Image (tube, rainbow, N blue to C red; front, side, top):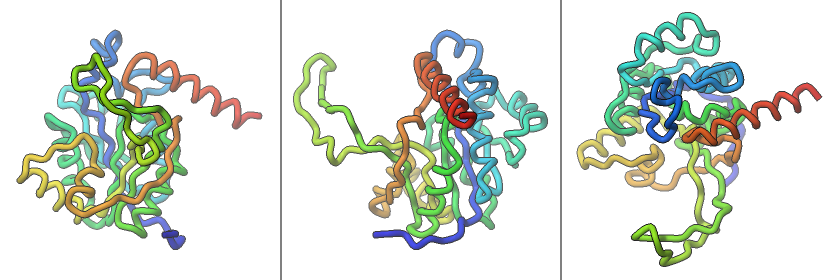
Length: 245
């Protein structure tokens, strides 16, 4: 089904920056992941800048670790990429708890919410806008890329047991965009059932049905390990070189 082109609906962005950064090691012991430097800016500045450039995004709700509240508040006051941040809220124990806190803080006059991981600091504004456009027409949207690797199952972590059909497998990315009012009710359904997925689209899949896919990019990687930070820096340098050529 082809979407009918439409103007982008005013959207609230919930940016998640409340993780513990346990897989980063090294610097993460003293610097939490959102504040790691990447080519002159922190991850949180890179992510906020992409949403700031979207004319559809009217506000950013920043979900942070409670220990980072004062530092985030200082950044909102002093960093241009964070100028759309309207409120900072504390994250919860699990991702769903953090998402719920962020969505509850959204302006109720806005129809859509785009939920994004700050760790995906290389997100591009054009991709954000495509996801918002798709959700405006279809009610929801998920940025994702097809699985390119062969995927095996292993119950013990030492032996493979089966090979999955990668032709039907997709790697979920963010942003994931939903109608705010409906998504709030899905969050409450999930809380009542103690359903706590690691992905927001899983709520829609469970209670509503399939989520329309917006093609993502391998460059929209999630910075999880120190090696990811090196790759992300190389991508940013390549982007700058392309723009200047």
